[in-house]
Image (cartoon, rainbow, N blue to C red; front, top):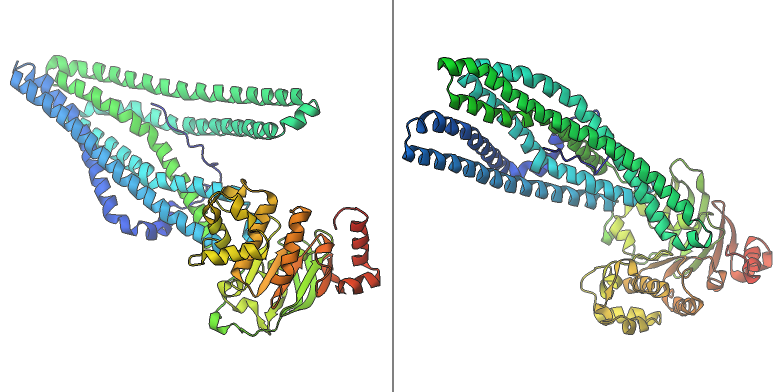
Length: 597
């Protein structure tokens, strides 16, 4: 017998978790499964009863049928023994099917709710919780919750039923032999707790060593050209060898403890059989105890050690599953820092004239001020450009406008109405966005253009591509709008990905078009195509453009130079050149072939 150690998540953060409190929180997800749980428990008890009846039938065969030399009785008892075993297996199979379905259903509903809630959280939450680690945590914790309701809880119930059922029958059959068995069993059960704790610690160290090897392998395989050119392959090989030695040492020690423990447990079962034979010898000789009873005790003892030994480990798994559920509920209890407003679509001024930043201050958690007393106005139909050195606050202004974050102080208004009063969907429906990092989904080109919105005519999609002179993408993509885009758009060039992102914003036909470094990742030819279409797109629409390449915004209505969280300069391209200030310096730097500002 070997226990399957859970290596999906760390065992930290399990202390202090109230299992009853977690189950109370899980009640809404379990409410519809009450009858299924009841049926599963009934099937489990029937399965345990079938297993417990087997040794009783075996005793009857040995004590009655065989001495009486009754072939019909032997056949009947044998069939009955086989029937009870088959009955127990069928009941166990049905119970597993039901509980597995319950676990999968509960986790499906829980993960769906967690995912929906995460979609509503502000970006500050994801700043504190890296997406990859967060998703891995959700998957691993969900798996533990599934096991709690499909495997662990029923295993705990089965162990309890098996132990008490077995001891009850043994006490009725012969109290003396039973007490001897209990006297042997108790020390083994008490020894199990520290041994299993030690084994869990050892396997955590094994997993840690394995994770280090995996990390080094992934890093070095990605960097093979660099390692070869700089002659560092020997170093990489040596590092992997060292980590492999560490892993081997830890795994050998873990296996030594594991197999040693289970061998010790097997020896205890043999010792228990010896106790039964020795303590039952006098009874057999005197006729007080039958041979069938001794055999029955041997069979029950084999059924007793496993559940008793694993009882503490099952309780530990329940606690860890409760901790995993609690971490999921922590996500669900997290309140977004960009709460929804109350104003609906009808409350939005269709003839709005300006969007204003009013004395806006903002800082990221535990960071310095990213924006300090920023005030400016975007008039309807105006193209405003944000330029300046990286880290100056340009993208922060965009994030606040999109309500990815909220101002720490001050406000952003549309015709005097704070945008925080509008529902998020109402406000964001009026904004088109093109980011420097393009997000494309695995699916068709059409699905990426519409971002999975239904009912948008194909002709409108083609028109959006035509506006930005990107119709050639339809020819490149096999199947046109029905062509498949791989995850992340890896089957497209960087320029094509950016054009799709741009066409996506055009197709939305927004009031406000936000271009955050929209042309920084494309080649000069593609940049010119986008630049030519920008003049058409921004007509009768407010455009806020963040740019590193100053040549893309020379024709902007107004250019704001953002530096160290403040608006250092404001004016047209020619006005700012005439002042010979920060903007003029940035232009000279780029014209002279220096680094982008």
